[in-house]
Image 1 (cartoon, rainbow, N blue to C red):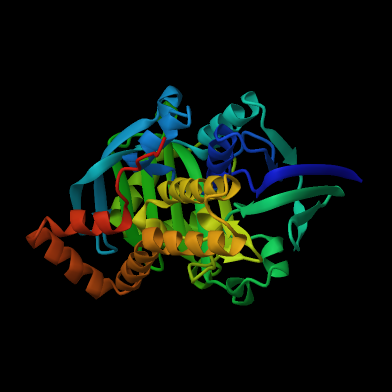
Image 2 (cartoon, helix red, strand yellow):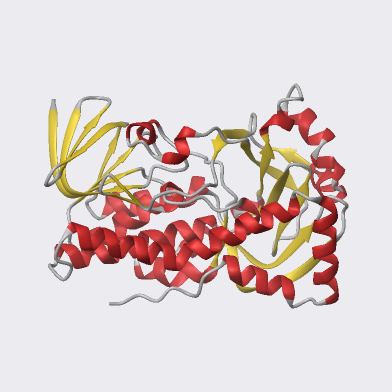
Length: 377
């Protein structure tokens, strides 16, 4: 058995986990990150990021501009009937693949002396400190653990997290394509039982990622048949798919997505990113929320290790309240929008209202996005 010891262990090396690792490392804390996959790798993700996080990433010496992301300024929204409208994004954003961004952050962490263990965590025990076991029989002792392992994992069952007790009817599908698509637009298109997000990422690639209702999806023999029979009912989606060429061997999928309430702290583990809360794809801001949650968690942990926060109980209470203050209303808005768009007539009524009052859509966007992140030096 190999033993490790650290101040902070981060379970999961996705966007949230890597951002937290860089922040905590920059503060002089010892950090070990456990990630089951090697880099680079693709992930099921919308790959649009609001510019609200740019100042923070630059402060971390992780300016994504070097990856040549696509600048995104407008949102094109359509309902199942094909009715649509376009509006400017208040802060704007950029398109960048997780394949490139996660690898970039990983390389930053490693270059600054960070430790990444490619393994799977199988158990987390807490007394005064944490004792973590991995699949390959590595034991890691840590003063604090961050959960950043994504939408769902086997460890959620051991932690007895509530959302794992219920089946979810949602499936997500993602792939990159070549073809013609306006670089400065992110598209959000409704179809029967789901939503589809489309935007360009680096190297002129088009990312298409959609959330589907699994009971409807399983009626079709494959993804192509489902897309042609269901997504094509929205004429905007039909036009896009028919004009694009698949760059992957096959689209990536992930099932059992749960958008219900999750705990920001479970078993004394501070949860960040999708592990703490999953926003509906139609809100288009999950990547920024992941980065922001890493920032909140890191800042509180730095205060804890410096003695400003006196106990783990206070740390956990502050993190829960901070997480709720920043994200609870956004998740609620996502659930509300999802409920509206499931009803075709109601969705058209809402869109008609937005066409008459164009300021409504930017207002809704603001409800699902945050303010520009400032950093306390």
